Image (cartoon, rainbow, N blue to C red; front, side, top):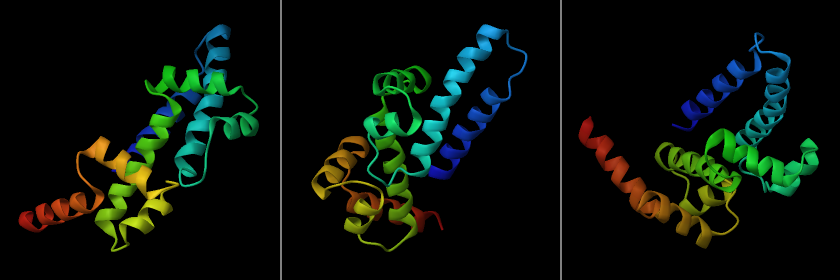
Length: 144
């Protein structure tokens, strides 16, 4: 799931990057958005690190408020929600594809505390990480 979402994101980025038929004003807007797409790509690759708007602002020489508003404009969600989604997608993938402990997966995917991880997971998926793993593995066994 994570890989398909990342691929979808990169395809969209590539389509926007290669548009050449735009008038000069459109090219300038696209150029500004391309910088944000670079940030989105960076976040998708380094989601497990401690990424903040301030860090991105320094790294990509844009204001934190510009990055934040661009995320909302391009993706329909704020930076923190996007980062959370990326991390949760990877958590789900690791829960189903490895025998790693939930605690190890929590820290491997960039969450700073288990308490925050559990709260975010429960809020977004309606189950604890352990229950999610059990349920999905049981469903996969029934299908086989």
